Image (cartoon, rainbow, N blue to C red; front, top):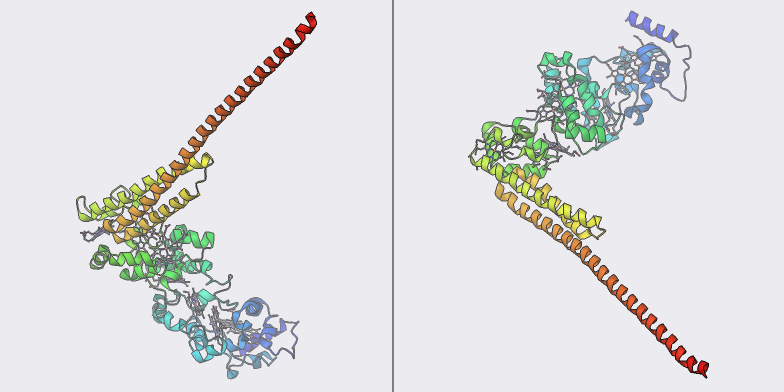
Length: 428
Ligand code: HEC
Ligand code: HEC
Ligand code: HEC
Ligand code: HEC
Ligand code: HEC
Ligand code: HEC
Ligand code: HEC
Ligand code: HEC
Ligand code: HEC
């Protein structure tokens, strides 16, 4: 204790600019702003800390007496001064307020108070409870000072920053090797459709680590519940899957629902090649040639290919008509309708039934054929108009030359008349 006092006194000596301000009785901030080294940090981060913005201060977390200018009095354990909490104390240190609805309601009744309870159920919390020093505590993900709201883009738990926050441990082999966990999640995720959308295009509809694992409750999605994780955003796909013959098959064999075909972190943009019986088709890894699954996979793929063929032919006709300067608005509308059906077909792949895809394929083909019909009609019209133009031009030319001939005829007969008039007079 004497050693501590000595260090405090030394610290005081090191803050020559320390002035006691009567209007702002917060000796903690005033003094700490001026001490050197690590102890200054917390005071400089106060302005951006959500706790300070709500009128809380150092004393609300650390205890002590913020009206005392004397360091011993200010940081007196008898006045509830807690000092620096040890790592193993931190979840409860924060939970003192955050798990107490009565305290939190005073500030923000809408802020949930379940973080600590959820944390204890997570893989992190379970390992924390048995003294594992590698797992995160509250400040690993939120910092201890300069804590920001999750809505603040500079917060480590703002959606676009979450993958980096989790990766600070999960991409570190020196930590993960001990736990037998791979370190590829962040790398794979950042290459996936989801990571590309969130990290590179800022599309916040795309999931980050906590969308799939939970934040405080972070755990591995249990094998059969993966579909539910994805269903938060891909609900139609999940509903189709749930009614498909694959649902029971996956349950019986303990196969992870969506993951079997799409993976988890490295989910790529799917292609039609994934479907059917070709080299890149996922179906052939489980379905033998001749089996119902194999035959159905072939039928489903050919339904998609047929629609694509009709659409390609329609697109070519529409492009041609547009190049000729014809109005192709209606045909383009039909093409878009066909495209909607094609997208629909790709979703309905998850019904794993050729019969379910059939009416969609028909509807799409209907629109593609209409688009092509309209485009061909426009092309015919163009040629008809051009022929009409030539006919008109020829008629015009004929009329003009007829007129010219007539005029010449008239002029000629006019001059013979004049000659007839004068010649007798001349001869007389
Ligand atoms: C007059 C200056 C002064 C005042 C007032 C003061 N501190 Fe400190 N505080 C220090 C110095 C200097 C240290 C570093 C002491 C050390 O290294 O042991 C310190 C250390 C700390 C520590 C770290 C203790 C540890 O266990 O490592 C905490 C936490 C802290 N202060 C919080 C507070 C709070 C809360 C208040 C207000 C109630 C407060 N301080 C008031 C100067 C002050
Ligand atoms: C939201 C609660 C909270 C508030 C508010 C808070 N602290 Fe802390 N403080 C902590 C926690 C938690 C730690 C332990 C950090 C660690 O172990 O890395 C800590 C550690 C410290 C330390 C030890 C050195 C360090 O940086 O780790 C000092 C000094 C300190 N706080 C001073 C202050 C001062 C001064 C204020 C006010 C300007 C303040 N704290 C406000 C939670 C808080
Ligand atoms: C593994 C990282 C991690 C740990 C550990 C962690 N948090 Fe969080 N916390 C997050 C993430 C990510 C969010 C934002 C997403 C969300 O709300 O789930 C968040 C959000 C919050 C929020 C805002 C909640 C809301 O709904 O607006 C509070 C409050 C909070 N955490 C407190 C705590 C407390 C207290 C602890 C310790 C018991 C803790 N956190 C531990 C990652 C973590
Ligand atoms: C003295 C009570 C108290 C303690 C102790 C405390 N907090 Fe808070 N915390 C609050 C209050 C009050 C708010 C502001 C709530 C609001 O108005 O939205 C808050 C807000 C937060 C937020 C922002 C939530 C959001 O996204 O809007 C986070 C994150 C947070 N605290 C984390 C922590 C962590 C981590 C600790 C422990 C180091 C801690 N708190 C300790 C009372 C406390
Ligand atoms: C401070 C380091 C640290 C941070 C930050 C961290 N983790 Fe962890 N996490 C670990 C450790 C260590 C384990 C292994 C625990 C064990 O031995 O089971 C783990 C385990 C997990 C597991 C369970 C894996 C399994 O096979 O059971 C999931 C899921 C997980 N973390 C997700 C996350 C997410 C999501 C985030 C970010 C919101 C995150 N972690 C942040 C250290 C961390
Ligand atoms: C689209 C959902 C999704 C996203 C986003 C996601 N994960 Fe996963 N994660 C999973 C699934 C599914 C599993 C496999 C779990 C199972 O089989 O039970 C998994 C497994 C894990 C595991 C266990 C070890 C392993 O690799 O199998 C860890 C650790 C993990 N994820 C961490 C992360 C981290 C860190 C991030 C962010 C960089 C992240 N995850 C992003 C869905 C996701
Ligand atoms: C938080 C919402 C969310 C969750 C959870 C989610 N996704 Fe996504 N997913 C999206 C968004 C948004 C896109 C579109 C990204 C883009 O713009 O490229 C997408 C795209 C996809 C794509 C590519 C679609 C295409 O046509 O390019 C696949 C495949 C996919 N997700 C599968 C999954 C699987 C499997 C899971 C569960 C392990 C999952 N998603 C969880 C939101 C989510
Ligand atoms: C991980 C293995 C696996 C993959 C990959 C897989 N299936 Fe299956 N599928 C099964 C199992 C197991 C059953 C149920 C037993 C059976 O009928 O073969 C099943 C059943 C089916 C059925 C119902 C068969 C019947 O007898 O009524 C169809 C149709 C089907 N799958 C289509 C597909 C298509 C299309 C793909 C590719 C997009 C595919 N499957 C990929 C494992 C798989
Ligand atoms: C048996 C393999 C298989 C399973 C299981 C599976 N998918 Fe797919 N998924 C595919 C194939 C094949 C495609 C590509 C269809 C195409 O483009 O022709 C696809 C395409 C997609 C697409 C892009 C097309 C669209 O619907 O927008 C998304 C998103 C998707 N899957 C999500 C999921 C989700 C979520 C689950 C779990 C509920 C799941 N998938 C389960 C094989 C599967």
